[in-house]
Image (cartoon, rainbow, N blue to C red; front, side, top):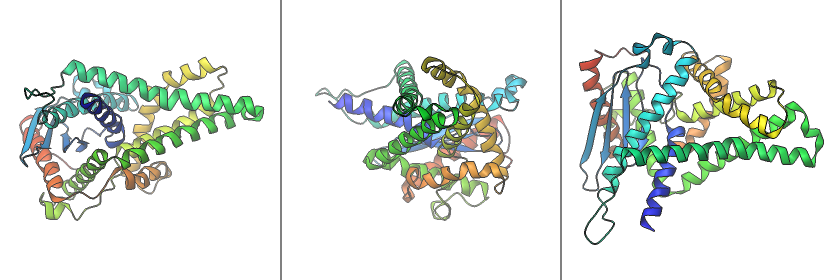
Length: 329
Protein backbone atom coordinates (compact mmCIF):
# COMPACT_ATOMS: atom_id res chain seq x y z
CA UNK A 1 0.00 0.00 0.00
CA UNK A 2 2.87 2.33 0.85
CA UNK A 3 4.52 1.72 -2.52
CA UNK A 4 1.23 2.29 -4.36
CA UNK A 5 0.71 5.58 -2.52
CA UNK A 6 4.22 6.74 -3.42
CA UNK A 7 3.64 5.78 -7.07
CA UNK A 8 0.46 7.87 -7.14
CA UNK A 9 2.29 10.70 -5.40
CA UNK A 10 5.12 10.60 -7.93
CA UNK A 11 2.74 10.36 -10.90
CA UNK A 12 0.77 13.36 -9.63
CA UNK A 13 4.00 15.31 -9.22
CA UNK A 14 5.03 14.45 -12.79
CA UNK A 15 1.65 15.55 -14.17
CA UNK A 16 1.87 18.72 -12.10
CA UNK A 17 5.32 19.34 -13.57
CA UNK A 18 3.71 20.37 -16.87
CA UNK A 19 1.60 22.88 -14.97
CA UNK A 20 4.27 24.18 -12.62
CA UNK A 21 7.09 24.67 -15.12
CA UNK A 22 7.36 26.10 -18.62
CA UNK A 23 10.05 26.20 -21.31
CA UNK A 24 12.21 29.20 -20.36
CA UNK A 25 13.90 31.63 -22.68
CA UNK A 26 17.59 30.90 -22.85
CA UNK A 27 18.48 34.33 -21.43
CA UNK A 28 16.21 34.09 -18.37
CA UNK A 29 16.03 32.20 -15.10
CA UNK A 30 13.12 29.98 -14.16
CA UNK A 31 12.30 27.01 -12.05
CA UNK A 32 9.98 24.28 -10.92
CA UNK A 33 8.47 23.20 -7.63
CA UNK A 34 9.29 19.64 -6.59
CA UNK A 35 8.57 17.47 -3.54
CA UNK A 36 9.58 19.60 -0.54
CA UNK A 37 11.79 21.87 -2.61
CA UNK A 38 12.52 23.95 -5.67
CA UNK A 39 14.62 23.50 -8.79
CA UNK A 40 16.05 26.64 -10.42
CA UNK A 41 17.76 26.91 -13.79
CA UNK A 42 19.79 29.55 -15.56
CA UNK A 43 21.06 29.41 -19.16
CA UNK A 44 24.12 27.30 -18.30
CA UNK A 45 23.28 25.60 -14.99
CA UNK A 46 20.58 24.24 -12.73
CA UNK A 47 20.37 23.83 -8.99
CA UNK A 48 17.91 22.17 -6.63
CA UNK A 49 17.24 22.47 -2.90
CA UNK A 50 15.06 19.99 -0.98
CA UNK A 51 14.11 20.28 2.68
CA UNK A 52 14.77 17.14 4.73
CA UNK A 53 12.56 16.15 7.68
CA UNK A 54 15.41 17.19 9.96
CA UNK A 55 15.20 20.74 8.61
CA UNK A 56 18.46 20.53 6.69
CA UNK A 57 18.49 21.39 3.00
CA UNK A 58 19.86 18.86 0.49
CA UNK A 59 21.29 20.52 -2.61
CA UNK A 60 22.56 19.49 -6.03
CA UNK A 61 23.68 21.41 -9.10
CA UNK A 62 24.95 20.65 -12.59
CA UNK A 63 26.04 22.70 -15.62
CA UNK A 64 23.82 22.90 -18.69
CA UNK A 65 24.57 23.42 -22.35
CA UNK A 66 22.05 25.39 -24.36
CA UNK A 67 20.82 23.34 -27.35
CA UNK A 68 21.17 26.35 -29.69
CA UNK A 69 24.87 26.54 -28.82
CA UNK A 70 25.33 23.04 -30.22
CA UNK A 71 23.05 23.39 -33.23
CA UNK A 72 22.11 26.82 -34.56
CA UNK A 73 18.85 25.58 -36.10
CA UNK A 74 17.59 24.73 -32.62
CA UNK A 75 17.39 28.45 -31.97
CA UNK A 76 15.00 29.14 -34.86
CA UNK A 77 11.52 30.46 -33.95
CA UNK A 78 8.96 27.72 -33.19
CA UNK A 79 11.71 25.07 -33.30
CA UNK A 80 13.29 26.58 -30.19
CA UNK A 81 9.99 26.18 -28.37
CA UNK A 82 9.87 22.43 -29.04
CA UNK A 83 13.54 22.02 -28.14
CA UNK A 84 13.30 23.99 -24.90
CA UNK A 85 10.10 22.17 -23.93
CA UNK A 86 11.77 18.79 -24.38
CA UNK A 87 14.78 20.03 -22.41
CA UNK A 88 12.51 21.34 -19.66
CA UNK A 89 10.69 18.00 -19.37
CA UNK A 90 13.97 16.06 -19.21
CA UNK A 91 15.40 18.42 -16.60
CA UNK A 92 12.14 18.37 -14.66
CA UNK A 93 12.23 14.57 -14.42
CA UNK A 94 15.83 14.67 -13.18
CA UNK A 95 14.88 17.24 -10.55
CA UNK A 96 11.86 15.20 -9.44
CA UNK A 97 14.04 12.09 -9.15
CA UNK A 98 16.52 13.90 -6.89
CA UNK A 99 13.72 15.34 -4.73
CA UNK A 100 11.91 12.00 -4.54
CA UNK A 101 15.04 10.17 -3.47
CA UNK A 102 15.69 12.75 -0.74
CA UNK A 103 12.11 12.65 0.56
CA UNK A 104 11.42 8.92 0.16
CA UNK A 105 14.92 8.02 1.35
CA UNK A 106 13.96 9.19 4.82
CA UNK A 107 11.00 6.77 5.13
CA UNK A 108 11.79 3.07 5.78
CA UNK A 109 9.53 0.65 3.87
CA UNK A 110 10.35 -2.52 5.86
CA UNK A 111 11.60 -3.65 9.26
CA UNK A 112 15.22 -3.69 8.08
CA UNK A 113 15.01 0.02 7.42
CA UNK A 114 15.22 -0.30 3.63
CA UNK A 115 14.16 2.84 1.75
CA UNK A 116 13.04 3.59 -1.79
CA UNK A 117 15.55 4.81 -4.34
CA UNK A 118 14.25 5.72 -7.78
CA UNK A 119 16.62 4.79 -10.61
CA UNK A 120 16.91 6.80 -13.85
CA UNK A 121 15.17 3.95 -15.70
CA UNK A 122 12.30 3.91 -13.22
CA UNK A 123 11.92 7.66 -13.56
CA UNK A 124 11.95 7.39 -17.36
CA UNK A 125 9.21 4.74 -17.24
CA UNK A 126 7.18 6.95 -14.91
CA UNK A 127 7.60 9.79 -17.41
CA UNK A 128 6.44 7.61 -20.32
CA UNK A 129 3.41 6.45 -18.33
CA UNK A 130 2.57 10.06 -17.44
CA UNK A 131 2.85 11.14 -21.09
CA UNK A 132 0.56 8.30 -22.22
CA UNK A 133 -1.94 9.29 -19.54
CA UNK A 134 -1.67 12.91 -20.71
CA UNK A 135 -2.54 11.87 -24.30
CA UNK A 136 -5.47 9.81 -23.04
CA UNK A 137 -6.85 12.56 -20.79
CA UNK A 138 -6.34 15.60 -23.01
CA UNK A 139 -6.55 14.18 -26.53
CA UNK A 140 -8.52 10.93 -26.55
CA UNK A 141 -11.23 11.68 -23.93
CA UNK A 142 -12.18 15.17 -25.24
CA UNK A 143 -12.34 13.81 -28.80
CA UNK A 144 -14.48 10.89 -27.67
CA UNK A 145 -16.80 13.24 -25.77
CA UNK A 146 -17.18 15.51 -28.83
CA UNK A 147 -17.90 12.44 -30.98
CA UNK A 148 -20.67 11.34 -28.60
CA UNK A 149 -22.21 14.83 -28.66
CA UNK A 150 -22.10 14.75 -32.47
CA UNK A 151 -23.92 11.40 -32.55
CA UNK A 152 -26.65 12.71 -30.26
CA UNK A 153 -26.93 16.09 -31.99
CA UNK A 154 -25.81 15.95 -35.67
CA UNK A 155 -25.57 19.76 -35.80
CA UNK A 156 -22.38 19.46 -33.76
CA UNK A 157 -20.75 17.70 -36.71
CA UNK A 158 -19.96 21.21 -37.91
CA UNK A 159 -16.17 21.76 -37.98
CA UNK A 160 -16.40 24.76 -35.66
CA UNK A 161 -18.87 23.34 -33.14
CA UNK A 162 -17.21 19.93 -32.98
CA UNK A 163 -13.82 21.38 -32.08
CA UNK A 164 -15.41 23.90 -29.74
CA UNK A 165 -16.93 21.04 -27.73
CA UNK A 166 -13.61 19.17 -27.89
CA UNK A 167 -11.78 22.23 -26.55
CA UNK A 168 -14.30 22.94 -23.79
CA UNK A 169 -14.12 19.34 -22.56
CA UNK A 170 -10.31 19.54 -22.58
CA UNK A 171 -10.36 22.73 -20.52
CA UNK A 172 -12.92 21.23 -18.12
CA UNK A 173 -10.73 18.17 -17.52
CA UNK A 174 -7.71 20.40 -16.94
CA UNK A 175 -9.57 22.62 -14.45
CA UNK A 176 -10.98 19.59 -12.63
CA UNK A 177 -7.47 18.11 -12.41
CA UNK A 178 -6.09 21.34 -10.92
CA UNK A 179 -8.95 21.55 -8.44
CA UNK A 180 -8.52 17.93 -7.31
CA UNK A 181 -4.77 18.43 -6.90
CA UNK A 182 -5.37 21.50 -4.75
CA UNK A 183 -7.38 19.35 -2.30
CA UNK A 184 -4.44 17.00 -1.64
CA UNK A 185 -2.19 18.11 1.20
CA UNK A 186 1.02 16.98 -0.54
CA UNK A 187 0.14 18.92 -3.68
CA UNK A 188 -0.74 22.04 -1.69
CA UNK A 189 2.80 21.86 -0.31
CA UNK A 190 4.13 21.75 -3.87
CA UNK A 191 1.91 24.70 -4.80
CA UNK A 192 3.46 26.63 -1.89
CA UNK A 193 6.94 25.86 -3.20
CA UNK A 194 5.67 26.96 -6.62
CA UNK A 195 4.77 30.31 -5.06
CA UNK A 196 8.23 30.49 -3.49
CA UNK A 197 9.83 29.86 -6.89
CA UNK A 198 7.84 32.67 -8.52
CA UNK A 199 8.59 35.13 -5.73
CA UNK A 200 12.31 34.36 -5.93
CA UNK A 201 12.42 34.78 -9.72
CA UNK A 202 10.62 38.12 -9.40
CA UNK A 203 13.11 39.24 -6.73
CA UNK A 204 16.06 38.21 -8.87
CA UNK A 205 14.66 40.04 -11.90
CA UNK A 206 14.12 43.14 -9.73
CA UNK A 207 17.74 43.11 -8.49
CA UNK A 208 16.82 43.01 -4.80
CA UNK A 209 18.61 41.11 -2.07
CA UNK A 210 17.74 37.41 -2.14
CA UNK A 211 16.62 37.21 1.47
CA UNK A 212 13.29 35.72 2.64
CA UNK A 213 12.00 39.04 4.00
CA UNK A 214 12.64 40.80 0.67
CA UNK A 215 11.50 37.93 -1.54
CA UNK A 216 8.20 37.61 0.33
CA UNK A 217 7.22 41.11 -0.87
CA UNK A 218 6.72 39.86 -4.43
CA UNK A 219 3.74 38.22 -6.10
CA UNK A 220 3.26 34.47 -6.54
CA UNK A 221 1.75 35.07 -10.01
CA UNK A 222 4.33 35.05 -12.81
CA UNK A 223 3.60 35.33 -16.58
CA UNK A 224 6.28 32.76 -17.51
CA UNK A 225 4.55 29.84 -15.83
CA UNK A 226 3.59 26.36 -16.94
CA UNK A 227 -0.05 27.11 -16.16
CA UNK A 228 -0.03 30.00 -18.65
CA UNK A 229 1.80 27.83 -21.18
CA UNK A 230 -0.73 24.99 -20.97
CA UNK A 231 -3.71 27.32 -21.22
CA UNK A 232 -2.11 28.95 -24.28
CA UNK A 233 -1.56 25.49 -25.83
CA UNK A 234 -5.21 24.55 -25.24
CA UNK A 235 -6.63 27.77 -26.66
CA UNK A 236 -4.31 27.77 -29.68
CA UNK A 237 -4.90 24.06 -30.39
CA UNK A 238 -8.65 24.65 -30.41
CA UNK A 239 -8.18 27.31 -33.11
CA UNK A 240 -5.85 25.12 -35.18
CA UNK A 241 -8.19 22.10 -35.08
CA UNK A 242 -11.05 24.30 -36.32
CA UNK A 243 -8.99 25.22 -39.38
CA UNK A 244 -8.08 21.65 -40.41
CA UNK A 245 -10.94 19.79 -42.16
CA UNK A 246 -10.15 16.24 -41.02
CA UNK A 247 -12.92 13.62 -40.84
CA UNK A 248 -13.11 10.36 -38.96
CA UNK A 249 -12.19 9.62 -35.34
CA UNK A 250 -8.83 7.98 -36.09
CA UNK A 251 -7.76 10.80 -38.43
CA UNK A 252 -8.78 13.46 -35.91
CA UNK A 253 -6.90 11.71 -33.11
CA UNK A 254 -3.81 11.22 -35.30
CA UNK A 255 -3.71 14.88 -36.35
CA UNK A 256 -3.90 15.93 -32.70
CA UNK A 257 -0.81 13.87 -31.93
CA UNK A 258 1.05 14.97 -35.08
CA UNK A 259 0.44 18.66 -34.45
CA UNK A 260 1.61 18.62 -30.83
CA UNK A 261 5.16 19.85 -31.64
CA UNK A 262 3.90 22.67 -33.88
CA UNK A 263 1.28 23.82 -31.38
CA UNK A 264 3.79 23.70 -28.53
CA UNK A 265 6.36 25.65 -30.56
CA UNK A 266 3.94 28.38 -31.58
CA UNK A 267 2.49 28.59 -28.04
CA UNK A 268 6.02 29.11 -26.75
CA UNK A 269 6.47 32.03 -29.15
CA UNK A 270 3.15 33.52 -28.03
CA UNK A 271 4.16 33.22 -24.37
CA UNK A 272 7.59 34.66 -25.12
CA UNK A 273 6.13 37.63 -26.99
CA UNK A 274 3.40 38.32 -24.43
CA UNK A 275 5.94 38.30 -21.57
CA UNK A 276 7.72 41.21 -23.26
CA UNK A 277 4.57 42.97 -24.51
CA UNK A 278 2.08 42.82 -21.64
CA UNK A 279 -0.48 45.04 -23.41
CA UNK A 280 -0.55 43.07 -26.69
CA UNK A 281 -3.45 40.98 -28.00
CA UNK A 282 -1.42 37.80 -27.53
CA UNK A 283 -1.03 38.65 -23.84
CA UNK A 284 -4.81 38.14 -23.50
CA UNK A 285 -4.33 34.44 -24.32
CA UNK A 286 -2.01 34.05 -21.34
CA UNK A 287 -4.25 36.02 -18.94
CA UNK A 288 -6.32 32.93 -17.95
CA UNK A 289 -3.05 31.26 -16.92
CA UNK A 290 -2.39 34.08 -14.46
CA UNK A 291 -5.92 33.67 -13.08
CA UNK A 292 -5.40 29.93 -12.62
CA UNK A 293 -2.22 30.55 -10.66
CA UNK A 294 -4.60 31.34 -7.79
CA UNK A 295 -4.91 27.55 -7.67
CA UNK A 296 -1.42 26.41 -8.67
CA UNK A 297 0.48 28.84 -6.42
CA UNK A 298 0.00 29.34 -2.69
CA UNK A 299 1.71 31.78 -0.30
CA UNK A 300 4.92 30.11 0.94
CA UNK A 301 6.49 30.35 4.37
CA UNK A 302 10.03 31.65 4.89
CA UNK A 303 11.55 28.15 4.96
CA UNK A 304 10.08 27.38 1.55
CA UNK A 305 11.33 30.70 0.19
CA UNK A 306 14.74 29.86 1.61
CA UNK A 307 14.77 26.62 -0.43
CA UNK A 308 14.03 28.59 -3.61
CA UNK A 309 16.81 31.08 -2.82
CA UNK A 310 19.32 28.30 -2.11
CA UNK A 311 18.38 26.56 -5.39
CA UNK A 312 18.85 29.78 -7.37
CA UNK A 313 22.17 30.49 -5.66
CA UNK A 314 23.33 26.97 -6.51
CA UNK A 315 22.46 27.52 -10.18
CA UNK A 316 24.03 30.99 -10.28
CA UNK A 317 27.28 29.80 -8.73
CA UNK A 318 27.70 27.39 -11.66
CA UNK A 319 26.38 29.97 -14.12
CA UNK A 320 29.30 32.25 -13.31
CA UNK A 321 31.72 29.38 -13.96
CA UNK A 322 30.18 28.17 -17.22
CA UNK A 323 28.36 31.11 -18.73
CA UNK A 324 29.47 34.29 -17.07
CA UNK A 325 27.32 36.89 -15.36
CA UNK A 326 23.58 36.80 -16.03
CA UNK A 327 22.00 39.61 -17.97
CA UNK A 328 18.38 40.26 -17.00
CA UNK A 329 16.16 40.58 -20.07
